[in-house]
Image (cartoon, rainbow, N blue to C red; front, side, top):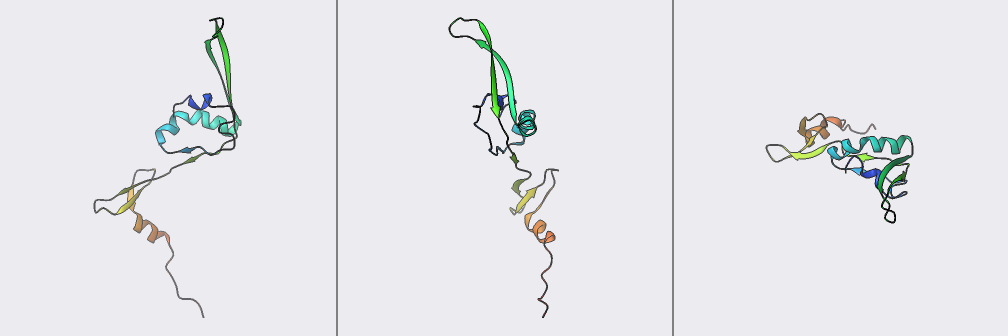
Length: 113
């Protein structure tokens, strides 16, 4: 996704949709447009092009309607040196998925009776 690609979508192509950002790099390039869609509810841009009849330069306005919500991946999956699944957090540290899950779950206790 380029930084300008969202500006040239059809007027209602992403209205009430949830664009899923898979690559962090794509989100960085389109972050301004995504922020505008969320906060302002629309994107507008003026672009210059040739009129096919007269050949003169004319200004064309493009408008894309929101609102939108965005979904982005916050972690990437990989495996550790032993081949076990691990989770890489946004900070870049990797931990064993099993250890992460085990440490976040409370210990089981017998039912009171």
